[in-house]
Length: 288
Image (cartoon, rainbow, N blue to C red; front, side, top):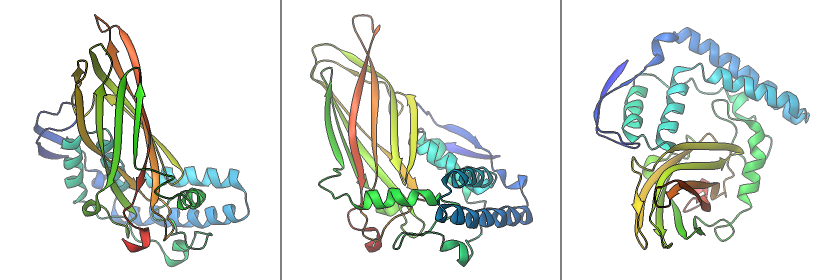
């Protein structure tokens, strides 16, 4: 267990010591090597199943690969890191990031596995990435900045939500297929009553994979907005291990819902929509 000093963060974090389980002792180096050897063998089987259009078998192999990957301590921590960032638990995310420094990444893919991707120009899977997601890369590659805007402006029940995403290059690595996007949210109460934001529900899609995050409030707050008042905040979401085309700029999209309490006693619920906005790179993947 690694104990870290917290600085406060999302969901009301107030600092103090935070414990993050470092699972390296649960698996020896030899066991990790054997685990990834098995994963790489299954990647080859996945390639064969996809090429033969046996998609039922491919789906089962994909699920088995994911189960094996989650046995690796580094992969487990990395997923926890992504979940902490998406849930806006930034103090915990920092602790997990530091814990990951004690565990080496998985061994690199053998050359014959790196070439699993069957579509020309699509980067092959890395660390067990789902080969079936290549079609999603092709679909997104066809989108342009005009057809996939990185912002949305939606009004529901008199509550306006303006969302805008932006790429964070300093925290991203095209080589490692890890892309971090921030998003800026502006909530404007254009109704005639006072409301309070109670919870959030985000839905993302990237690389053919759907994600979902639910949580209380936003960035540790549950703001109360009177008529005409505005609340703004910034958060982030990571996109990782997704197939991409060299000319691709659009990597995925996000939409969501805020639940507000309204009425004299706060006993009436309002579900406020956040319109779809896309994660758009400033330039093609092969130029990053």
